[in-house]
Length: 180
Image 1 (tube, rainbow, N blue to C red):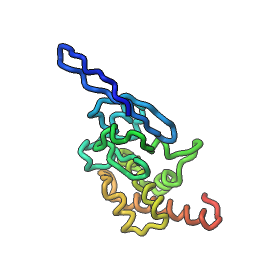
Image 2: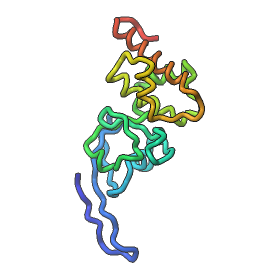
Image 3: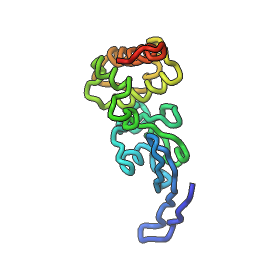
Image 4: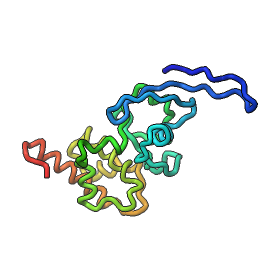
């Protein structure tokens, strides 16, 4: 991480230091200049124009800002951008490939797990992390994995069904079948 010394005096006092950080976001290497107190959610949305990462409570309670940081779901509103230097970040924009919905995204649509859509990116990324580590989760394991993601529109039934359906599709593919 490179520091840009921008501490010259101004009429409003010294300017804050800025730092150059390197990130890999959705597979693309990115270099960003940030203030020391910049939050990852703001860098993603404001600097990189990845607005699928939502800002909700800004306290780490709702999960709408969930991204994968080196494969682990984190609330981007609680992570300083400096802490992500050198890391791989996946946002909802990086889930679909070649214009095709990811199996989780397709399952959310098929199972009517999308209502207003505000929580959906965080739910999908939390579920992706779950299925990466546990491709055949039980319902309690699914519920535990999305416990940090609040949805005000549904009772979570269809969300849990969608995650279970995506796991079933993966199981069929693992056994040599074709995903629909």
